[in-house]
Image (cartoon, rainbow, N blue to C red):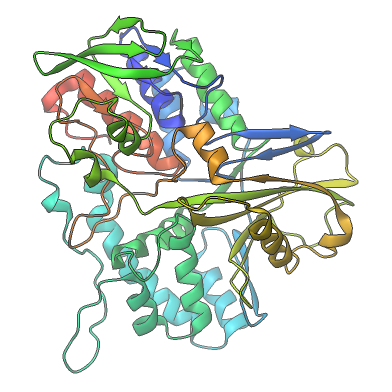
Length: 473
């Protein structure tokens, strides 16, 4: 039994079905996909969650392991090149190529001055060391019962000052190793994309730009929602049963082992294994999950960030030289905004219109009118989209409350990070209760499409192979 129909939960369900389990997915909303949503109006279509895919190998592996058709026969995949255009606060612009270390160094030298590319390249070399040290324990193995093994800082920071002060945060990495404020802003943007404040994110967050710039950014034809469609269809092919509009009120236990769930309708459903693909902190808070201690859920809380999204329907075709993704860095009190402009006929009514998505990470606890924030995002996006104000036909604002409606919580989880305190680790795949497992963005190895897919492989391995399971390969 699986609770929730997000990408990580469906990845778990498909793998378990192939292994011979009878799998039923209970989803509290009327559709699948979780945060991977879609909004359509008047021939315009938009992704309301992630817009790009990183590490597509995760989903290639899922489709290879669960059926005859590989991923590329189920969805159209293409690399985004350039990977991103960055518009800095001082007006400087740079286009970074997709998955090209040499090209990135050259582009930074050309835009920011000689030496900028070399400093960034040296930083990526150190980031690779952090990646090599954490890749397997953070991404491919179940989280150990004692997470202290993952609490060591893996980033080999340059020593600073006469006192050789340690570098503990990503902000310190930028300040001490990159120096140029534009390079610092570039580094910060990779953490901020997940809602991680650079001033508190561990230096190990250096793996985020390394991962994207090494393995590339990919677009799914028709939008990321098409990937959710494909995973759902693969589950159906493997005879996974889906029950929608079926919230779970309680995970039932017997002799301290999970034995099923009680639905919102009052019906009790038995199960040999219960996989939770819904937000772990929220379910502990609401006492849906069995408690072992009064404050157990607090260990799994994240950092209180959500996503504000503005969907823009524009008149006029994309101009020549337009890029898929632009990061407009904070300037003049405006927020940093990611602007997505996919050149995809499936997302627009005709060639004389364009669908554009703006997103920014915001505090999840805020309440009230988001219109002012949305207006400031549109103003910032004008630095990336020529004539935006004149082209605007209509807009739709998606707030943290819309995130809550889709996923069960207004917060957006980020990937697991290693650090000295272990506070950036999500819930482990194995819960404290036998027979109960955690999958999806709120569990190991954390949020993001690729990480959620990895969680499915880990949970399926633990259920199928038991304690002998040592991780996916």
